[in-house]
Amino acid sequence: MSEDAQACSLGVDSQYVTLAAEIFSLLADTTRIRIVLALRAGELSVNNLAEIIGKPPTAVSQHLAKLRWGRMVSTRQDGNRVFYRLTDEHARRLVAEAVFQAEHALEPESAHERAGVDDSPAQGGCPR
Image 1 (cartoon, rainbow, N blue to C red):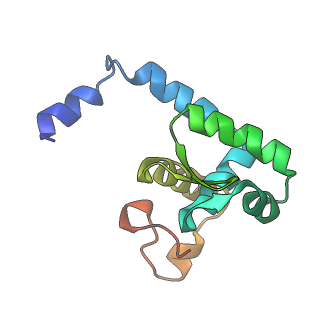
Image 2 (cartoon, rainbow, N blue to C red; image 1 turned 60 degrees about the horizontal axis):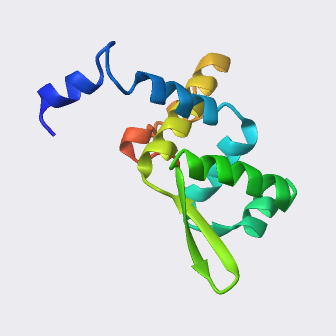
């Protein structure tokens, strides 16, 4: 994509601004953030996700439905089991940046800065 095309989609009058706000709204929930963080390592079933984030499978399933509606997660069916994965790296990067921003807001020096590691999402984010 050319630099001019990127600048156009990031302008204040971009046609994507409203949809971007809806994406932030979808991510404005701690359970959904935890789901995205858990899915960084690869695809997981609802039961695996529920165990990892400590929520009932029915609640996790409802949150996954919303993330799927927002095209942040996609599915693969294996028999009667459904596995979820991040559709692309954008949701992972958005959540990672938000967590890093929260860390910087609360601590004078972030954990990755103390360790002397470039842990930014642009560089791949935290180890899994």
